[in-house]
Length: 274
Image (cartoon, rainbow, N blue to C red; front, side):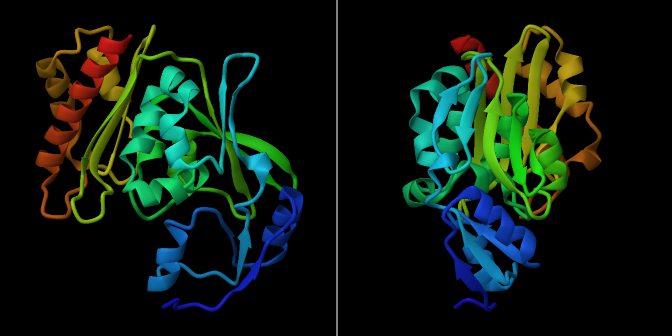
């Protein structure tokens, strides 16, 4: 049962879709629908108009830009993202996060852009995108722009805009993702993503925190390593306990420890493939 009434339109191109979103208060873009449709059913979301962008080929595909940046179209499904050779080679934390999402049905329908844009719940791609230093490309009636994955996680997708692509900088295989999933929903109870760079590790967590966050304090404490489990756990113990949000029968102390354990595993995996 859908608890809200809405109109539906299938635009022929991105520009028409943007015009419809800008011209109709309460309009929402529909891609995979794995978050939006359940929210409409429960009343957690409202929409006056659904703008179906699922068929727009300009928002699909994975390619490499001249500078080595990986451009992942927003309509690339999670299943495609998890198996794409370029993503596996150059952004393994992104591929692993996509592979960890839900079940095969969710991954075959859910999209890269939709997973990044989901609000009100922890999802897997944002934390991996933050660790990878990725940006989201946005399109609106006044042109295109980019925001960092970290900024997107903090503020969400601006009104009347859509995510058109995820832009992942060159990084190679030294990235990894680890997750402890809620058994009922498959959303992350806690997930950690890392990318080891020449300047040290980039570390981000989600589920255990209010939103996907980059943990610069942990990064600074670990520096150039070694990234032993003891060192990683000590770095996490130094983080403020209020950073971790208790819930679903878990304490902040437990979630802080779990985030450290998952990060240690991710760093070990990243080092093994570097």
